Length: 343
Image 1 (cartoon, rainbow, N blue to C red):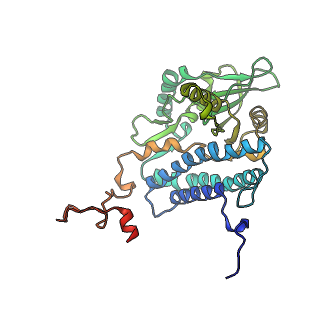
Image 2: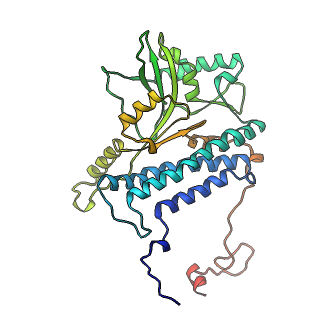
């Protein structure tokens, strides 16, 4: 056997790319037609949840190292900057595949099974009027549009918050950029009255009724966007005098931490995108253009629907006979898993 140089990078996998490869497996389960529709939706929602955490922690950590000027390579031979570039390039097609599969396959499949995600314009006039009344009574009072212009600073965008970017004008040539935060205290999926399994997304309902929120304005464009901030904030616990103060400081740092990803509508105009990139301090690599819904995590709500025909059969785990006694086993004997592995 020839001697091998165990410091050779070819023998090692990159930590961040390996994690992303696992998330690709999660996505593949969400695109596997052998799984029932609601099970596929579960995996698409998990893919969003997991990649949000991945960007907050793993990509956030890489960006911290880059900002600190770290150039030391990992065992696989990559610098933090090289890892950051490769991670973003690897993640981009995964998000595109998630959106494409939802739009072209899973959403129509669920509609065929009686679970519809509609836009307000796709509904009968009676339903549109009911939704407009619901918006005016329950959603409108929770909205606070924040304009950005020479007289108003750019609003703070919290981590993982979904927002609308509105370009409007009041008779002038220069449009005003307004940010409307989707209220987290309202359900994302709004049930259509009279239709048990028909829903509209709250961001679509807000966009449809902007004339009530921004009256007398000429709305030029409405686009959705979502910001992901770095959550990899470290403190020296050994020198911390008060644990509560340390936790509060870390939470405060996370709140205002560096933006590591900006997800926007695929058709967001250049003017809105330029404002967001400039004010949030992101470059083109960190911008992800999305078709359809930007955030799938709220679709977990649909998985709880009483539709066993759209879910895998229930399964109850059972102890292995070599590790624990079964109900039908007369022996009262339990063995350690480590003893069995040793055996």
